[in-house]
Structures are given as C-alpha cells and as structure tokens.
Amino acid sequence: MVRFASVREFRDKATRMLQEKDPVVVLRRGKVAGIYFPYPTETLPLEFKRELFSALTANIAERLKEAGLDEEEILEGLEQERQARR
Image 1 (cartoon, rainbow, N blue to C red):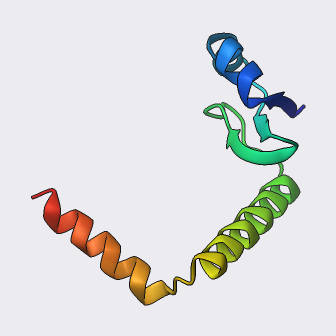
Image 2 (cartoon, helix red, strand yellow):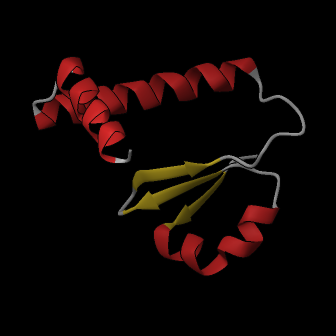
C-alpha cells in the first residue's frame, strides 16, 4: 500500500518510514515533491511501474519545457559537471 505524507511529516517521521516496506509519496502543498521506494525484496507490480514511469517522465518533460532546456543543453551541463569533478 502506498503511503502519503507531507514534507513535514516525512521529515519528522523519516526514520520510521524508511524502515517500512511501503512506498511513500511526499507532498508539498498537495503536489508531489518526491517519492521514496524502499529497496524491494519483491518486485513491484508491472502496471504500477508503468504508471509511475509515465507520471515521472511527464513531470520531467514539463519541468524541462518550463525551464527552456533541451536534451543537448542538459548533456552539455552533465559533461561540464563531470569534468569539474576530475
């Protein structure tokens, strides 16, 4: 079962939530701020994985569009970060 928690609740109860087996959807002002998945001892249902992947990729695409970034700019930024770490 998926659990929903506000950012504050997740922060205050993180130790306990991280020990549980259920995924936690963290909400900030009613919108998804993040998702925590415990390391699965069993595999997640395929349909759940598909829905999650679809939702996450749509969210990422929207954020990139809002920021005015394209794939080439992102790859250039990653390469610059990688070189800066050397």
